[in-house]
Length: 250
Image (cartoon, rainbow, N blue to C red; front, top):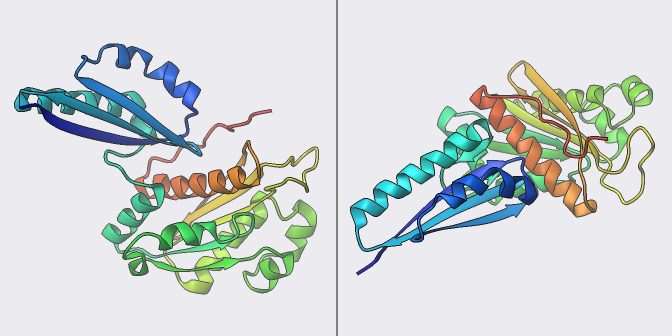
């Protein structure tokens, strides 16, 4: 009687076209009894290996080997070696380390809070979110300098880092994430086109920020900014942070 074994790996930052090119050689080496499937959504990819064979010990050995091979191919881009969403990975890290997190959201409009509260048990580490859509809220609630908003714009490193610091102080959280961007379809300029998003993550006294120009429609930009900012904090907590290349580098 044939046995079935499955293995999953979740990675971040690749388009389907890039993945197809990278794993072409790996895929060609798989035996007929092992199938591979790829689910890609807003730069988060789950690769699933499914093996069916009558010899269970051989099957498990081979599946573990191929699973590890995928881990070695993608190295620091691996979020999880099982089927998990980025918010689950972040939640697991926070819970293990007994840390708390809060969000200051502008362009993501509460999507970060929505994602984290979909995870059962998130009340153990998630304190809350400020949707500071208006500049007055950024200034009056989060303490962002009106001078910085005027000089650099709401979509800027200075403002998003200040948002991250402000919400962490306000909620007394160990970690925080802040987003500010132009989701579209209107509002873009030559210097800051639609899809431009500044994101900042903070862990105690360390703050890191990035600007990415995401592609797609309004929802695509919001979902990608949500995923990217969560992954930024995951990498900061794992001490494996590297600045991402712009996904739409002009």
